[in-house]
Image 1 (tube, rainbow, N blue to C red):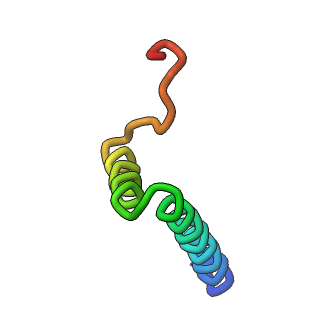
Image 2 (image 1 turned 30 degrees about the vertical axis):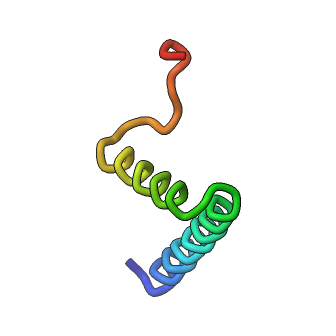
Length: 60
């Protein structure tokens, strides 16, 4: 990986952390800390278990 690629990757990751912080703040304001933490943990579990984030049309 070149220095430029590493810099671009770092900038991209920083942007995602900013977006996570913003959505977390909105969730806390609307529904409290417990909801926000639970939602983020659930999202992490979905990532770890390779589960889709959206339900398929057949399961609705």
